Length: 371
Image (cartoon, rainbow, N blue to C red):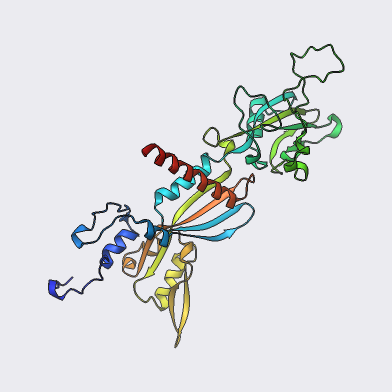
């Protein structure tokens, strides 16, 4: 690279970094051997020699921060978080996985189980079945609390494969029946001689849950189609399953998301025109069809970047010698593609809104402690 005298260098706009430093600050360079410039530069005096203040300013953050919803349906949501640090995106991910409450089966009372599945394995499988109910309508239950209509949900499962049927039967999650009046199993310590009084059960519901406004037209169900067990002729399962409110950091069965993840926005740049045979070769290199070919006339063709968002940065396009001078792969450090897969308890957009509230509460507690 030829040396340029200092007085011949172009003047830079005030309070702006040179282009190469700006790229190093805002992009991760995905080279053939390894990524570079992966660190985030937060130190306020990092560019003091250039007369540039690198401090975080609230007004700039408000100006740059954006949320763009890309895809939204009943179970999945994909959106872009623009203008934030990776630590904030990771905080949302961790909160979604471990700190949003849901209802999950915690206690299983087995009256009869002659299937090949052990009782403890059966209880584990029941606990992982997502319950479609808003957990915000229920209270947490401590060890000293009595199960009632505000902190518990009771399901009943009774399935039998007749001995003469000659075939195996499959028990599914939708065979669980909601008991709005609570448990039907009488406590073994109940020895009341008064036949007029109602015997005590494992729950103490003062009213039926379906009489409550929240559930009168919206019965509590579970995600259907999940296999619980398979029964042979003569085998039977009869049990009660009691669900309570909990957090994913206690057990994964209380996590409201099947998964939640993010990735930095890929950036694919063609450093020079790639035409004809090289264009065809580039298109065939990419396994996710990031590149396309356009006709530029006179029988000539040129490669273009058609779907940069689909790039997984597998680096197949730059793996061979000489291609790093033609194609540049980068990631934008402050632009995250965020995906939420809900288990069904709450819609994904509600889950993210609740995660924002929890992060806000955490920040307020820190400010209160420091003030």
